[in-house]
Length: 262
Image (tube, rainbow, N blue to C red; front, side):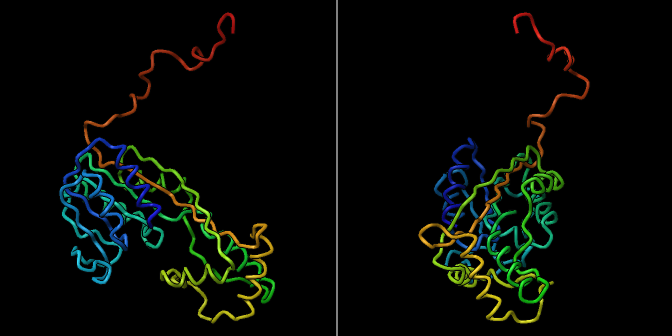
């Protein structure tokens, strides 16, 4: 969260705009709101969370997950950090964000994308297949970066931009990684997961495979987190638009034709 909050600050610094009212949506901590406040680009910042305990004494709005309880066209900036990958209806959530933005308002978000925890996924599948002859889904299905760009367009956001920040975290063992995931409430959330308890033998074998395939020379193991950043603007007449189809004055064939001396 600290990493993406720092990145958020850098991205806001590149935008020459006073957003007026901003909202952080289910970010879980105050880091996003602090980054917006430090940028000086919003005079009113509201935090939206699913539980009062996440707000502490800061105050904010409590709302059910996957909802945006804000009036249409009421925000100049909406931010979502590390929560959209846990949403069942990502297109619906993005559409709600789009409605809450006033014309030419900005959405900035980041979520875990394809490749995140790939080492853990591979190790668990290999171990379970070896021990039982089959495998259950135990790691989230994460969205591919190309799909994220399409989702922004589907939600009606203009000028969509998507990029990936690849982070690697190292642990002594796979069990230390699992301990972190459990502490942040990021285990066993799939509705379609197997209800049969995993055995100690499964995790012990998975840890062996993890160490065999994904360890560094010093013996520590790697865990990948691919952070997919996305941005999009609520449509406005002032925004740049592509030229009208067929309006070009020079054909592509003519532009690519070799010139003397080439």
